[in-house]
Image (cartoon, rainbow, N blue to C red; front, side, top):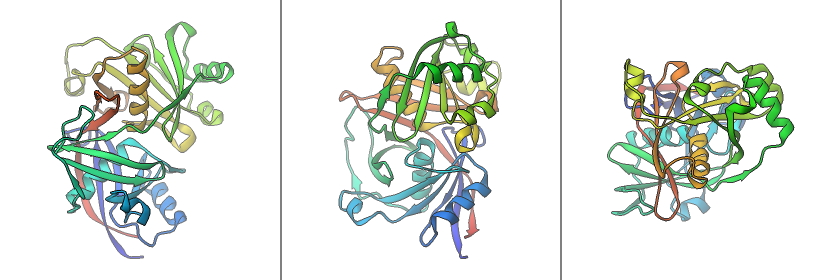
Amino acid sequence: MKSRAFKQVDVFGATPYFGNPLAVVLDGSGLSDQEMQHFAHWTNLSETTFLLPPSDAAAARGADYRLRIFTPGAELPFAGHPTLGSCHAWLQAGGKPRACRADAGGGAVAQDVIVQECAIGLVPIHRTGTRLAFAAPPLKRSNAEPGLLAKVAGALGLQSNQILATQLLDNGPLWLALLLDSEESVLQLRPDHGQLRVLGQKVGVVAVQQARPATDLIAKLDCEASVVVRAFAAPVGVDEDPVTGSLNASLAQWLIADGYAPGTYVASQGHCLGRAGRVYLEQGSNGQVWVGGDSVTCIDATVSL
């Protein structure tokens, strides 16, 4: 074991402890897959990441660092909140992006461009002030098999008339996404996580909502949002994820393309867990969707690994 720099970062929230926590090991060099997975299981957070130097091939294409992402039960090829939180930690630890551009293109204004290498490929990240936004990876989408959809709806306690549309969304992680009829339908769900685990399918639920008055701290942080999201990921060891960047990325690509949501909107997630995650979605003029959010460091320390 050796002492390694470590941060615990709250992602998708400017107020500490109201977003989605992420464990970041800033030097994962020399750790085996098994050691990384064991530590991620021990942290018991939805994701734990390990920063590494980029591969030679990726460095030649402009990558600044390589990222490996683990849930308590498995490694992920890509995930959104680990991407933003790890980039925040890397920059805070003194990381310097290779590319600095005045115009990031695609409708997003940025001063700096950071390039992350992960299993899905290279992911550009824009920095505007302190807020980061990643380019949503290419999305594959298809219709859900009716039998699976019926079983998932049963596990969620949904009636068929509450489901407006569904899609299988794949941008690395695979989600079965359900567009529901109202914010209340999303927030009142009480899923059977054991049944979802047996089905082996991660599920995202979403509703496009009307503005509402702010009556408490979480509502005040959420009141700007026009879309509400929940993410159930029992098959990878996380019953409900507080705020999910990869899901919001694929949801935005689907909802905007099919006319369910405008080209720019704010999504809220985590209300049922006492969180107030805020995800900023924007489609640029070239069609690229950007997924942004704030991050704050809550723990800055070392870890023996």
